[in-house]
Image (cartoon, rainbow, N blue to C red; front, side, top):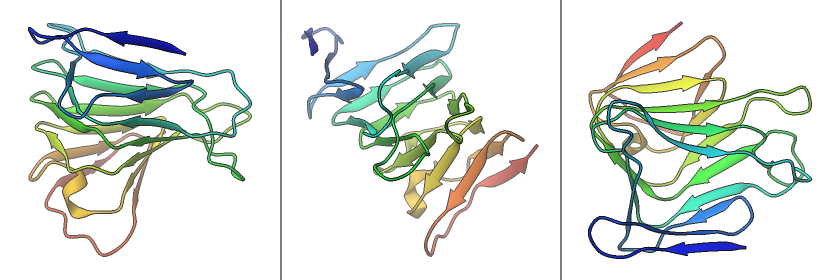
Length: 167
């Protein structure tokens, strides 16, 4: 297990517990790439049977486009679909991309959002599945772009006011 802790002056704290990222409750992890996208990449060569989880605090992409990318993220037990559950608040002003690399052994990585959307700008889904189970999981009034290699899974009774673009 690797643990890193920085405090004050906009620094961040996180704990890597084997494909999991835990951010302390009142901490903001700043992933602002300036002119380039800010990125969080999850990649594992593990047995593939434990899901990845990002939880706690806030992930702030600032003014750069945010990218959440899952390579061979771990799968929910009993399935072959790798998944990442995000319980952190995601913020930023230039949109967020949920992406992944489908593999021969696995289907598209799936992203499950359990917190309300805190970002503005477009949402992109590419090479992965974005599972939305509540109306507040996507930013209000934003554009959602689903690439040919992506999938948006809407589950439940939802009221959405986003513009949906299928490519």
